[in-house]
Length: 395
Image (cartoon, rainbow, N blue to C red):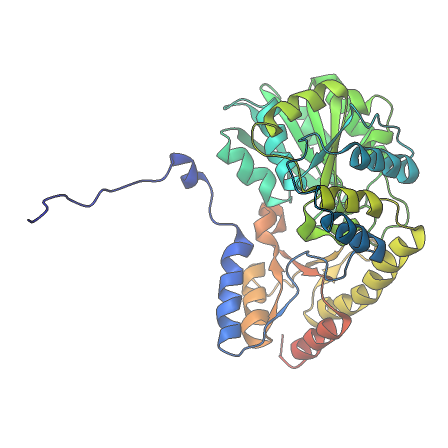
């Protein structure tokens, strides 16, 4: 018997039309195909640390995983051991006192926190302030959730700090959140106490919640700062932190949110309806990692990246790019020569002629269109080989 049924045409949700596939998701498929063809691409694009966590962190994970009674569901709020370790970490490194029972919420990475905070504070149609240049997820998740993205500029001549004059002159009607990120990604702009103080005043004066994403404060940076060090910040601001970069644990997906008790309760209401708690072994191992010695951080986050940074600077120079030597973090951000119409023209040449994958700055916003970003998350010999390949091409 023949069926006269016509194929059903299923359409995606309208919100998918507001965003495109994440640049790295799309580009890494192309790189994988080039590698399949034998091109042997060196990737200096992704900020995924290539070094392991501290030995005691891995040892603790194995100990807990071998116990038969540790594999059940865990509280969404996180184990007391992890929250107490997070509070210890903030007190030790930032001199910020947090109540581990009420002012800390563990996250499955900071990206999850962007989702939860937006859901907790912004209704569809509300506005959120996003830095330009800035982390693309601030924009894409805001669009998916139906909020209006309003960009504010970071000032290159001022170390990529916010343009506060522009912010104060904006129509701030309907603005619920301001996203900020220091030390800055992608530009490497340093965290400044004065900037944090101005952000707190901005939040207080306009009734806007400022969210500081702070995963890079230990990378090539001798003086970690926190927005929560400013008096009154905890009442109107939120800070994310992550173990991905500072503790070489990107795949573990452990981050944290720190703020006042009321904000935490709102965010927890969202989070508890979306996910369950992280595996107990990961939580207790993360708690162990928060007690790493200062010497471990110096070797992993200062000495290693400093060596790699010197090689990355030579790559920038070979490509004719200029850069700020004062920048920090696990990337090097540089301005392309005037002879290129845009950064992607340069990065595509580097990919296909030198077989090195680096990031064009346009993915971070319009103010990144004439910049490239080099990741330091590759072994020294790989970065050295990338430099050799680039030197063998006429740029």
